[in-house]
Image (cartoon, rainbow, N blue to C red; front, side, top):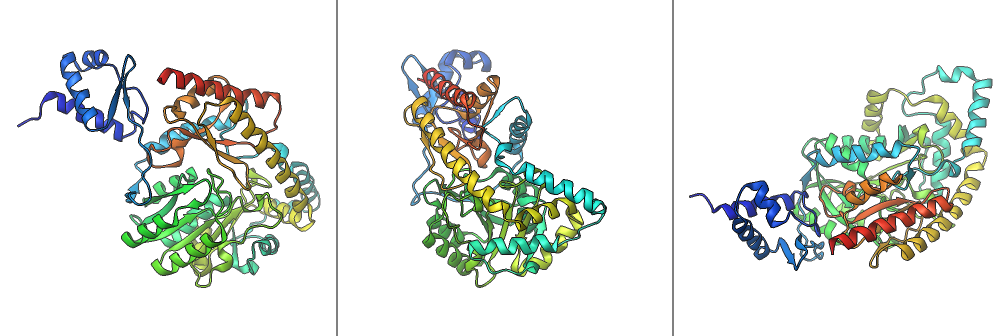
Length: 473
């Protein structure tokens, strides 16, 4: 026997809520509008809405209408963790969001790329120019995998600061850190395997998981302490996890940094539960402290850690130079790298190696780190003054990304669309998860040429948040 019409309508709306069409705090269509659209009586819609209220899906607000109830993240004791596949719908939406980050007319709070003033462009220009004059054949020569020996030697020297004792042969040059992450996953997993990821997480990792047909378990990541290791432990006991991808330093997007005890614990978990840690340390050298944090790889006694990084956030995003320390997977990784790209551009590798060798990189880092700290303070003060009450920001210890949490009734996809009309770009929280749980969050890049224009743009974002909040009351 078919269920009553009002129940079928309620089921349809509940499904739309679960699929993220109606987000937490959002207003659903009025009774009259739904009655007209579905060609049913007002009484039938009222019955459906009443059933949804009984189920705890929506709530009526006098003279305002019906709104989806806020869905708070559950406490760790009651959190249900299950592998999820990426169906591609989120990434289609993400592709559109990322395309807006290419528009030079937009103030780019959304793209995770420093403003050019924070990059050593003149030094690289001189280096490239000198190479082209003195060694013009450099553009014609292949630099086969594993890459430039001189560059790998300079990277090994730099990684001493993170307590890693490496030889150049331990390192493979890659086409940026994204390529390094892909090669790591290809070495460890096969289609259908399960990996643990931070949540929220760098959106490029979600795209890699989709491309490799993997399942992901999202482990909550707080802005203060990073990935929740209690929940990772729970997931590892329940599921066969092949890899855990973690950013221990200045995580994208939360800015979180793992403390010493957490670093020791996650390495022990990898040993106990037989999974591999993929350490994404792309922001490691942008710490605001004098001493760089110790890498997980430095304490890896059993080759359970693959280390990935790049110079994209500190020297030259367009050069696409990254590297990977694969340990026992190194031969497999090098083979995959060779098959996929054959070689890495020789000119860019040589230019960066020269830049590292002459000591200019350390001076560059000290300058940019001080500027980022100053920008962070300015940014946080503006948000505290101009955004709605209840807005929270992360407290990164390095990097240049800020995670902003708005009141629950604000939808940052809507905010994104409104901001674009004013020439302002941001990346909504929906880009950082396979679910809609971060609908009222967004990531902000404060590596900007901060001036009155940038101040005004951030104030405008605050004003748009206030407007949306008032409309939802």
